[in-house]
Length: 163
Image 1 (spheres, one colour):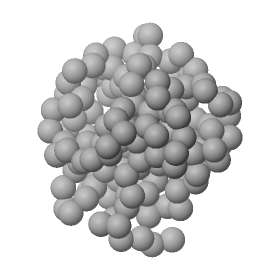
Image 2 (cartoon, rainbow, N blue to C red):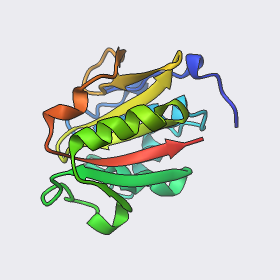
Image 3 (spheres, rainbow, N blue to C red):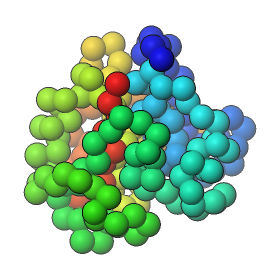
Image 4 (cartoon, one colour):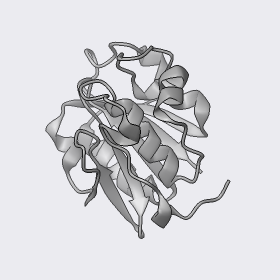
C-alpha cells in the first residue's frame, strides 16, 4: 500500500476518543510508525488485540513486529528493559545509545521507529525529508525535529518499521 507521508495522521493519548493515558504509548507510537511508512493503521482497539496484552496493559515494540517488515534492536544498558518481551525478540544489539542515534540518522529516511526505554515509548518518523520525534504522552499530537531525544535514557528497545 502506498500513502503520502505528508498525510499521515498523528496519534496520541485520547486519539479515537479512547482513554489510554498511562498505558497506551507503545500502541500509539506503533500507530504513528505504521502510518508514516504507508501501512494501514489499525484502530486502537485492534492494536490492543494485535499486541496480545489486553485492554489497559502495556506493550513493548517487539509485540508489533509480526505486523510489518521490520528489524528489532536494542541499545545501551538493557538488563532491566525487557518487562514483557524477551531479549531474544530483539535481534540486533547496539552497545551504546549514541550508536542507536547514529543508526537512526543513517537509516531513518526509509524507516520509522518505535522506541521504548522500558517506561515510555515514542515514535521517530520520516516527514518532509527529515526525521521527527512524536511523543504520544499528550492529547495534542505533534512532531518535533529528531535530534538528541534518545540520550535521556540508558537503554532502548526498538522496532524499526521498513517499507
